[in-house]
Figure (cartoon, helix red, strand yellow):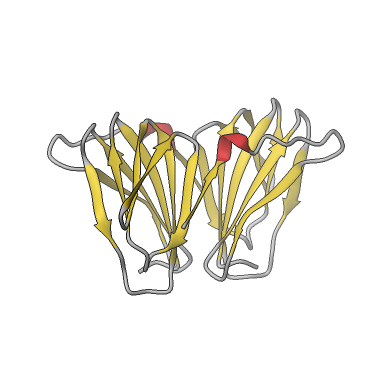
Length: 104
Length: 104
């Protein structure tokens, strides 16, 4: 067992979304993405049978889908197949916890 | 894709931990456990090769292990094999997001 204090994963990058690996095993991969206002995880998809969970830990922005932008705030959790187009754009500083299972 | 507002999963139960299923697929199962002060998820383990993540969304308490009690507060994320003894005890009202992959 290990314990991670998510509130200490506060690294940001002026140039692009800051990506930190929290856990990686055959079961699931967990990542922490931190965005400055305006930064984004561009819409993309993966040809795999995995699912992902995007949980907004702090801040506000949008979940991006094909032809849609859904307002996202702390406490919102998006769940779906990695094969469906998905992305994130921040309007404030934004921290997002990402879980992918099984890892791709 | 579906979006869940975790902050709206505010059900509590006077008698025992309140358990709500958020998502269940072959990839991962996600649950929301809400505890009144003093309520607990008793220490247990599962004979399976899955892993779990216990994320404290709100409140304070303890992660329970074999012969140990580790203080847990909002933002703390415990990750480990479901085969290792684990549990939770709340000292305040406490909301915990549970992810199990693959589901058992």
